Image (cartoon, rainbow, N blue to C red; front, side, top):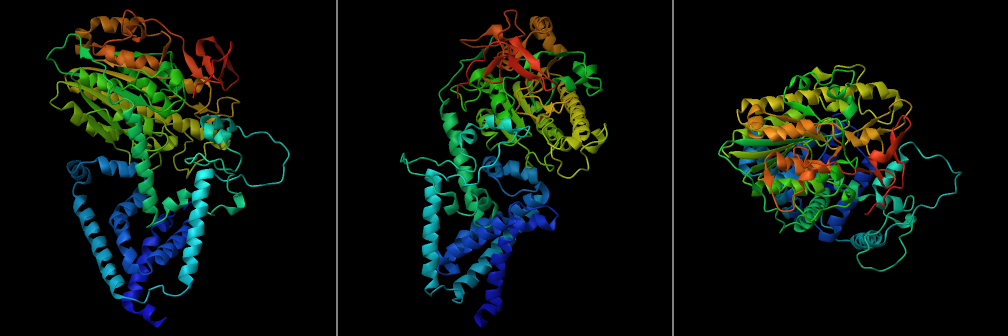
Length: 618
């Protein structure tokens, strides 16, 4: 025991303890930690495994270098964003140039460099101790016991990954009613097919072996391992690699695709087209569309703004709806990931436009990857939201500076996509205090649960305030377009709506099959210079303003707005064209239901096809 108490050896032990406590740092800030005992157990297991395999610290200390170098970033994110390094953050790091990083960090770059230098010196100093000491050599027979236990654990983990884990055996219970939101399971086909409590296997080998009994499964989850430190950084790296591979696979499908697009009658005048993608915004909560509360005091003053009162999305999830907006992907193919074609970004590029994708959403993850595949077609891609969808996320005004830079770019023709956070839950986190107009609100409530009906009034008031902030945000964007003095036009459309416990309806959030989820706000704004250049398009826009429209119309309309022509174009889908014709609109409700041949059931306004819905193709 005495050698362990020598100062150098104590420093080494305390170093390993300190880096292991990193996941528990949020507790110092009064934030709860998910699965703390699992994280503690995993870290203990990981240290024992490393020591058993490598025998002495000098042999595994090298493996800790990435964790030491990432330590300042991890602590920064935990402190200011309430989350550690994720695949999203790794994506930002991988895709940010040194100049962009310097611009983002500003003067704090010196603090960051000093922190990196300090942890590097810390790592090097402890490496020297690890190489000098033999007090921590694991030489006795217990090491072989640990290695055997490690081998068994690895075998169990590999088996469960390949063949799955059987559900836990429980005594039969009386049938009971499902909770109000239980039908959301339809959004996850894999989960629907999974036995309660069971986990499906990867099935790479093709062998049909029985799943691992539940009692024999390892007592921790992979997510908990990725939450640990320092070894959990490896799991995050693996996740990042898988995401990149998935992105590459989706992108590969459309690598050789070309629209062969061109602008019909190009001129030398600067031209800017802007698409603003809204988030979780509901048509009937906009005073522009008749809502009693004045949620759009600024937009209603815009003379060249044309509201579109009858636009629907086929699906009520961002990752499924946005691809339909920006590509020719049919709505009834939206449940499938990937698409064989590229988006309107590529068509604009072919026509000579410089393209931008400026996003206040996140770039990686289960709900964002399909959109990122399209976003990366742009010449300039920026994902600015380090805080995800938490209370640490940015307000949408963070997009103003990148928008200013884009507008001042020397390229004469530009397409700019702004992907906003809009009214994403938590609604109280989507706007500053100055916009907290209606009370009581979610401001000041710590971690509200959207299923808590006691907060119905708070939830609705904050939702309306988020629309009020969106009104200000969009008015500012229009103001910047006016100030540019260029020929400009803008389309706003939300990806999906939101259910808000309307009347006696017990549904909240989105992912439901209600009219509130499918009916989305949308409008077109144009400058006077745009009207002078394209008077017939403005005329057709006014003519078709009240037509039955869908997100499928947006791709065709956005290209037509800039007079971009391409083989196989469908001008009958563009509502700024005299060839426009309405088409059947389907929504994902008990299959593909004809929205215009449906009834709306109860206070939830559930969409029920009067005929027989078409089958979903997955």
